[in-house]
Length: 250
Image (cartoon, rainbow, N blue to C red; front, side, top):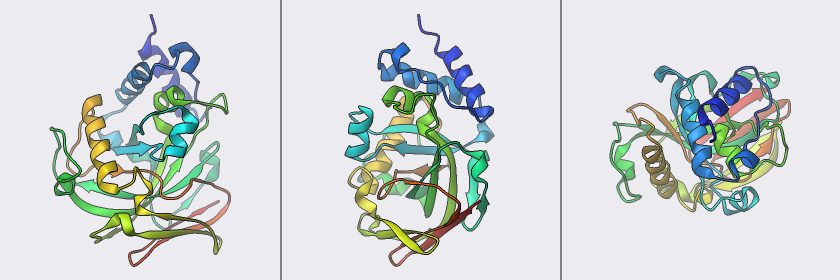
C-alpha cells in the first residue's frame, strides 16, 4: 500500500530544505489520483495563514502533451512566496526557476459550490497583472504528470502586479522584456483558450480536492505565452492598455 502521507512528508522536507523534489511517478505507476493525494497531504502540512490561494498549471495543450496530461493541473500558492511588482528577488532561493506571465484574480466571496464559465466573474473582486515563478526542480529532469502534481505543480513564488479593470482579458496582448529586449509574446486566451474557462476549471478542481476557497484568496490561471528560464536581470511584462508588472532577479 502506498503511504501518501509519508511521501508528502518527504516532499515537504525537500521543499523546506530547498532540495530537489522526489519523483514519485514510478511508485505511483502514473496514478494521478494518488499524486493529488500526496499534494493534499502536503497541503495539510501548512497552516491556514500559509495559503495565499491556488494556481492552474499546464494550461496549454503543448504542456499537457509533454507531461502526459489530459487536462491542466491545480496546486496551491503560499503567502511566503509573495512578492510585489518592482521587488528584487534572489535567484539563489530557487533551483531552476521559470517565469510565467499571467492574470491573477482575488476572490470577492467564499466559494462552496461549483461554478460555470458564465458566472465565475461574479465571484471575483479584482484582477491583477502577475508573474509566477515556477520551480520545476525534481530529482529527475524528465519528470511527468504525477511528479508535477505531487510536487504542487512546481509552485514556488508569485509577483503581484497592479489591479486592472478589463472587460475582455482573452483579447489582451502582452510582451515580456528582459533587460529591455523582448523575449516572448502572449495573449490572454493562451490559458485553456479563455480566462473564464481557466478560472472556473481551477475553482471547481479546488472544490473537488477539498481545498477551502475563501474571500481574499488569489487565483492564477496559467501561463500566457511560453515560460521563460530566469537569469539575473530585469523582467517586465507589458499588457496592452493595462500597464505592466516587473521584477529584478539577482
